[in-house]
Image (tube, rainbow, N blue to C red; front, top):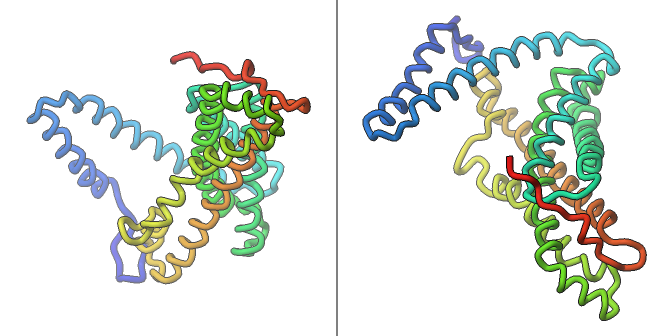
Length: 271
């Protein structure tokens, strides 16, 4: 369906077929340069089509849900998936990593998303699926990355520099004094991706949500305002997730006798 500048342009299957031809260009380049990437590219394109179509139909159903308790299983599934991804990325882990990561993502995801839907957008009800699901998904995606990076950095530091930390403790440092440096470094690493994105947003690339709104006919200024809100949501989610998991790891690996329980850190088995 085609229309004027204020009309949403709906793509039909013929339009998507033309878009698919763009992927063929990459496949031809792979064949010409003997990169042997054409099969993987084709599989990736097929999965993109199937997965996104499934998501589209599922979202159509979810957006029709009324009642928070009916929507709750969907939210739990999203958070469980994010937790699994976050805890399997680091090269090291510790007992209770999954539970602590899950609780972190629940608290951070719901707090930040509730603030956006209830206080900023003021949608009624605040859990309206059309707003809650996309916003929570974006917050979880960035928060799990920050959590994974922070966990990886902190566990690696405490594992590799165990001797230095234990020496500080033996010389009279409290557990907080000995852990403060590694904690700070880990939180900073977790926040690097979102800070880098905020530094170049609008200059190097137009974010997907803003681009989608503009293509859908929204006023660019309105789309920009929404994108600013999103970036600040992601910054809050990333920082809170990194700080929370760092403190939970600290609580798990340092006991009240100011000892480092480094034996609780273990390398993850290679997949």
